Figure (cartoon, rainbow, N blue to C red):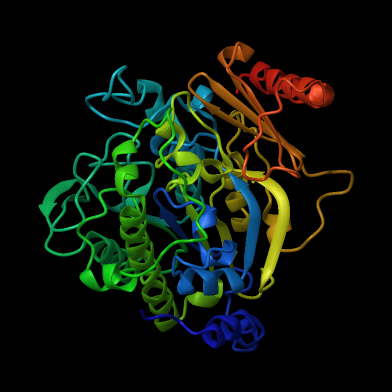
Length: 462
């Protein structure tokens, strides 16, 4: 594995004063923004979040070069809906993508959503906002929000999957809307096209580039052999995987060989990790690292055998909202603007992402759109919130018939507007969510409070 050294990253973080002395405009100009988006990568799977068996040295170094949000939550633990929330700042009831998109809804009963609603084309995405503010926008990798060939939304350069999914070897892709057949490894091809966008970036404009990697999404075949070799003898004793649960659903077949599939998934994660230094070195070579906000996150989490389940929200019947599927990494690195080796404990949501990036870029939110999130850019930069403001204490989830309210101590999961089956966890005593306390009257006030918070959240139309 190759990686950018900690010394390189941390010295870059201390360099903006030198850039100012050189007369650079980097300190005052809007930042470039590089969003590294992954697929099915839970926070718990990373070394910087405590994992000691899946090797992610480069992501861990990126985390140390800036701030790591300890409690970052998706709204919907499924890819398409979650991505739509990330890029629009709005929840499924608003943007209309409630599930993963598939032309042929699968399983029995049918699961998935055939297409976004027609109204989704009118949603204002982060790229629309930044493009209007003068950003040169590019998107490479998995899109999966409809119109995969031509995402639109202000992107000048796009390199996306042909049909929304692709094997890792010799993928079929769209390059600026035209079908192409690539030769090589999808993960490295995604990086190559990200670099190509940077090389072709419009002069005099800041850029917004999303490098959207398929890793570590299934299938687990097709990665270079060297990554599989890394894990040939790893036991994954610390993962906490369990025998298959009776209610296992999506990808339950992978639980027939949990250890073998853990090794393959870990190989996919480390292959992803090796892309980070390639991107950072290219930014450094182009003298762009000092004025680039780098963000690393994932569209949803994953279980990998925890709770006797493999996949994400649809890993079980009924839908689950375990911490493993709801918590994803959120790393921000921006030399001179964001403190190094920092962490933030606040509960933040994917609904907060768009306002936060716009705030960091000095760009106003569009008028007339209802946003439920708020900017955590001050938290990332270790600045106080505006006088009199407090950060919200609760985050919410919504997937089909299932809703969640989660604060720093408790998590409530309601199904079918409370008809059940329902769950309540005391996360202080039971962080792995093993004991359902919904019927325990000692938690009656907690249950009622969080139920009322979900009802209020629903009543706001979100």
